[in-house]
Length: 311
Picture 1 (tube, one colour):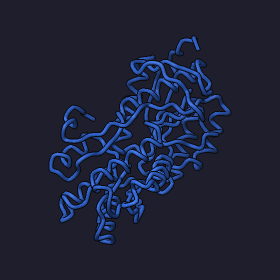
Picture 2 (cartoon, rainbow, N blue to C red):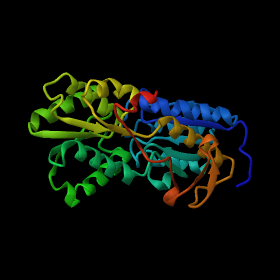
Picture 3 (tube, rainbow, N blue to C red):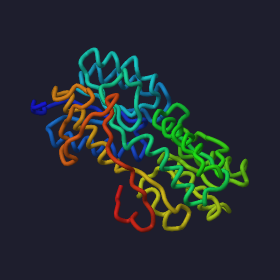
């Protein structure tokens, strides 16, 4: 635990896709954090979020002998084989944002408690639509670990008596693609004329859905919430398309992930429950069950606070 952080560590961020604006924010902050402790860091990755698109990048990073690979998994199992190969060569694996199968990594840096995210999204929407009506979910890809975990908790939350007036009619998938998410929103609103609300727990999905609703007859009639960044959602909050949405600070997620990777690669921690490590300005963090480290509770953004944030 008292070992110093090694100098000159080589670490790489492998996001779901390199052109996703949210992932860019996370990875840039992680690369900046690496500079604080004298590491060499970079971002590499695919331009599409398909299940197997990350595999070739993992293999290349293993050949380049990185000390740690940080991955936001598109599919929890598709990346397992190459990640296990990396681990067998003493390369530390940190999943962030979207977990891999726990056997294939040392740590998972979670944005917030998955349960808290899922349940709070249902509560947020229910409060805005008066607890009654048909609702839909617009997700990313059908195999995205984080999305599916949140949706599972949303479905469980909907079983509670206080949500008996809500009916989940459809889970749609926009594949974290702007145009497809836009079309899926259009499809949902045409297929379910009585739809009262949509939860889109993906930054690409919520922005595309807001764009569609803002220019349609559904503005002011269908309530949209989910997970988005303030900069992409600001115009939709201000024009009344969206009242409230949530997210954590993605910069802090990247920052914490970088320090966790460095602590692993320096031998300060192994990934065992109860171990502690220092994460720069974020202070000391403790590893929970299944190698999970939680960043903190999500923030709700609305007209009153959105201009205080720039990311």
